Image (cartoon, rainbow, N blue to C red; front, side, top):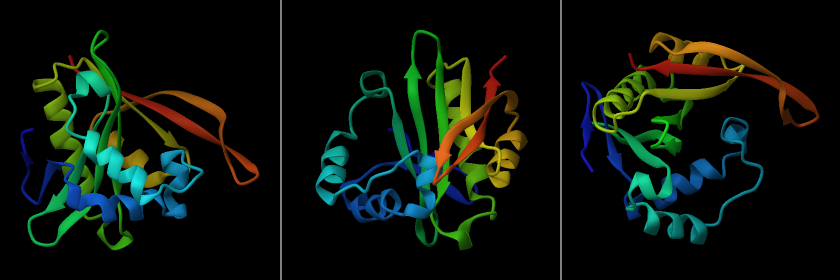
Length: 174
């Protein structure tokens, strides 16, 4: 796997040492809404996942990379999911773990690096993402990278006792 390098951050493949970092993210209830998670993950399950992380995107249909800065280390993760080689598309999601690191440009740079990788190396035609209409930061992030809102899924996700709308965004490589 190529390390994707930017000015302030780089993206790298998952390593066994990422177990605790991923464990903290996957079990942080404050972000379960954006990851569509409703149950905690054990260290054992995450370790098993890490043991399979070396598999090719064409086999497992996903790619998770760690977002790192050059000084402090791990900041978050960026994912490709629902990789569809036939139709040349994939879903994309990004998460910066700590509030203090959000809105610092890390997600923007990571997204730009992965978009470039997807279009140049994976030969994808399009990327898409699903964003809650309340997630203003993600709406701005993906819009700034050229993603276009193509739909609104009404009452799409149930959060606590309320239903929330979700936007569908696409970026098509012309």
